[in-house]
Amino acid sequence: MFRVSKHYLILMSGSAWALIGAYLLFMGSNRIAEFSLPYSFLFISIAIILGLLKAKYIFFKIVQKNMNRINSYEAEKVSVWAFQKWTSYALIIAMMLMGILIRDLNIFPNYILSPLYLAIGLALLVSSILYFKSFFKN
Image (cartoon, rainbow, N blue to C red; front, side):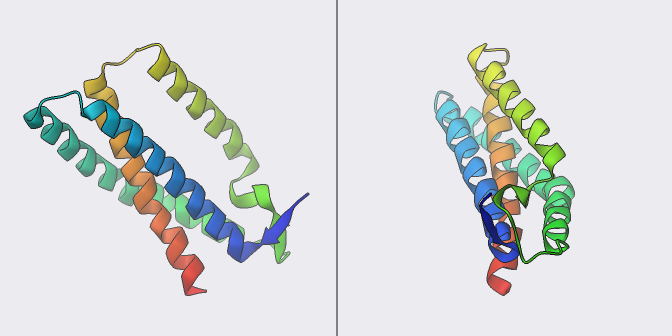
């Protein structure tokens, strides 16, 4: 099994959160482009507010828990997969599958999906900064 230092595990976590956040921002921005300017502005405004609230009140706590868990590992080098709790992988897979189904089955219209993608993407991207700050601080 490939092992990395705890320090680089924090970088990997931040990179994963940032990449997924950027992908969701891309998905949301593609969908928002089909709306007229006033609606686009409204949806983007809603997404920014919701994204920043989600980052501050939910994701920042998750990031802190993840960094505390990573830093608490006894060994200096740990499995590359240890940046998330093992139980979190099932949740991640379920969220990915649910996202694919919602998108491909057109369950929700784009005026709901666009702000949702943008808000979650922004929250992930903003929260990833905590990982990067920790990585570069050490």
